[in-house]
Image 1 (cartoon, one colour):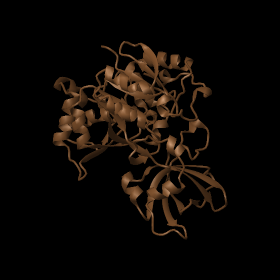
Image 2 (tube, rainbow, N blue to C red):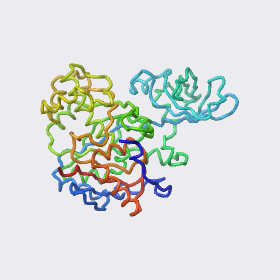
Image 3 (cartoon, rainbow, N blue to C red):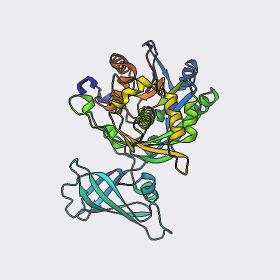
Image 4 (cartoon, helix red, strand yellow):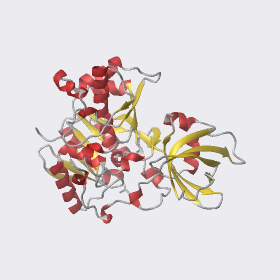
Length: 409
């Protein structure tokens, strides 16, 4: 399958620049198991889940970092520094640091950054930036250190520094500067675990009244964590989709969450990041069952590798995978397991962990659209996208969404 198969015409006018208010008022296209398409709003989500007997609704509780920093060079020129990930350190450790941190970043306007130093200033902090090295892919490794301004007591964690002077990392296709309101808008109401540089946008449709209605209907929200990286915006490389180099993202799951998941019959994932995490659990577990190791990074082609074929002969199920993790994985002192996943889901991949997916409308030529194609089929997503554009749906991160059911076999 070629990357050109995942392109469609997206008019600029269809790209949402701001969310609707209230969040649950966004449109929700429902693609049924029989391929029929209906048009509702997210206020109708509880009813739609109950109708299908859902007993497990899952979402990604990652929290978006204010990862975009506007800094000044000694010459007075401006730099825009987009922090991607800590350099060889867990994000939790980096955010808790009180002296200095090292991150991988993209730096805009850096052609004349000859001395490799810059500063950024917030209400409480002054941040010093030092370029350490450059990579072939255009990213840079930078050291960040900070001081608390006069009149402010104590020291601060790096997380507090970002809260003070960092900007919301809006996707570039919005073509506007982040505003104060984006600090709230570009964050799910259930966000808990700081570590993402992009929002798990399907969850942006949930607000407190909708969460209450979901709980009252018997479909309360369950949480897992995948820290979303900037690679989510990386377009598919030209050529065969499986030759695209997939980015790695960190998954964090608790024993309680996996125990709950293992006892559910009909699960729905909120967002592609949640689905990617849940499908990764299957292959992470099978990797240990077949090869005897828990990989720190789950390779992107795991489902298409020779060892994966054994899952068919073993009759390995979603429940087998979850119970194997519960029984055999090494749990940390918090009762959690962590690993990174590069899993790439493309059409032809059989979804194993969920029966439904809540998701937004994605960019042309993206890996997220590959995942949607795997979930409902190529003709189905193309038809749905065309119909929703004709119905004036709003696309991408701040846009409307959909509820997709796995097609009938």
